[in-house]
Length: 215
Image 1 (tube, rainbow, N blue to C red):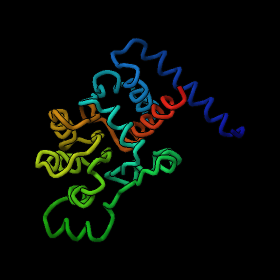
Image 2: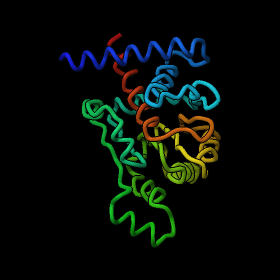
Image 3: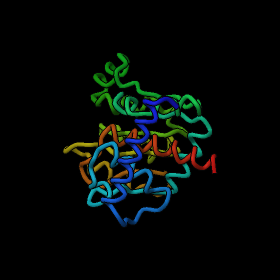
Image 4: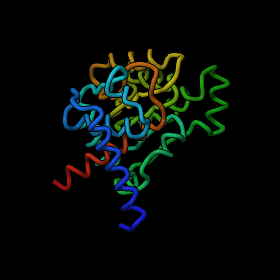
């Protein structure tokens, strides 16, 4: 580890201690809290431990960890999620990152079908979503499409990370996700979220895998 890396790690460690000190007691368990803490670290928003709390459903963390260890694909709604990922993790576990929203065929199909590009991009990625992880931080319509695909029985993702930010349908899409009774999911209450939150969740799950393997 070089000096610059050491300095960066020292800053991160100090930030995590500050989060611990400011939050104090919480209701998250030993695997949930590192994920929530990582979201707070990436957003500097303590509401994720309070009124916009993070919800874990249907054995979400364990399912996500197992899928990543087995080399699953990670399907994201926008490139911003990719930008926030620790690039070494997907390489080490051979996880393919899929984001096809900007492909010309997606734009053309969306226009022809009268749908958003986000919706079409999720349908286009159905093979990678099957047994994979979906991480949505920006587009509620992408999350709604994935939920519909699950309800149709055409796909079974190992984990849906649905944490889109915004005013139109963001909260509603998360409420719909939280109603799934079989599919593992991670979401939160309210309008807050974003690409940085989605990538933070994935990074935190990778860190849990590494901690597990080293113990």
